[in-house]
Image (cartoon, rainbow, N blue to C red; front, side):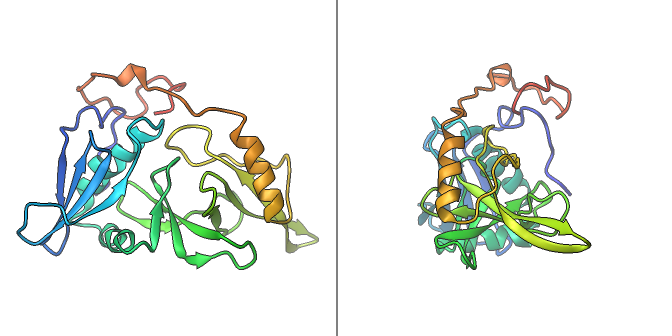
Length: 233
């Protein structure tokens, strides 16, 4: 079953949130005030480690709470992928994205040509974790830069006389807190230098400071879709 999708589910959730993994021994605690997700193993009440952390003043903090406090908490006892995610995060093999907490950088899958770039995985409301594909037409894969995680890119493929050829990299950053970036083709680059240059320009084009004021202090669940389309949430 997918996690219940409501427009203001974070506001309707009582924090801290506790979730138990499939092994019956590992507990996850989501602390809203501290901006941290703690992991506890066994019978000890004290957290053994911080699994994930986010800045409470970040524009994407609400989505961080949504993923851990709502989606993960509801599916942690069912989803094999989410249970494995905990292990990968615990040992540093995966890093959660700051702009879009539903994205994760897989440190074990480096880009074959761009140094310091790693494949991105995307979580969904069904408890799945799969390769992030921003391409509308091809089976493709998105990547992020470890040195500047806000910058994402993927290989653009074009059809020439029935043959598919890579023509360069499309680069973008998240423009809306919590959402994946929207790619355009105003500039296709060929190397890491170009990726960094375009990424820097796109980052300076917006602040990502958006506050979901219409949902503050509202605790009655509102179904997603029954709200102003101009809101980022």
